[in-house]
Image: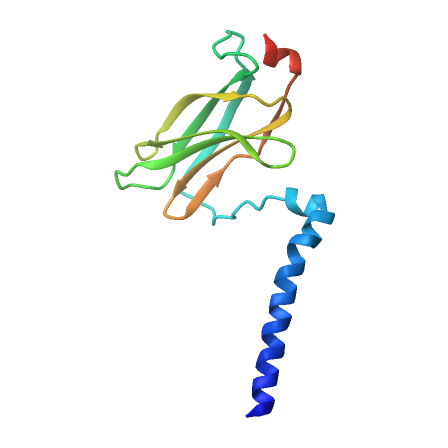
Length: 158
């Protein structure tokens, strides 16, 4: 009984020590805190998503320092016969994988049809940015390959 108590106390002390040490270890490793984990969803095979284009909007429609990116996405329903809305999400990410702009909306695409959607994303961050588009339904996703675009500091100030 005494041995079990000592083992239990030792285990609790070890766990507390590890928990106390973890924030200190992360402070000394800045890369460890910069990593963002993107959840991986199973593939949604009943939809295809095509990122037709992503370009900087030439009309100044946002207060500086910012820029507007126009994204055109094609969504094709290849297999879902039920009349149901799905979530269309467009994300603009920086080089660290952090979302700097996002737009999501419910869309309905009839079976065996393709709908086109044009979305405007406002960003206050420049540099190399990746645009992702995905359709999500029932915990599954159809995702495009990222499209890379560069926004210079001058385009943010226009």
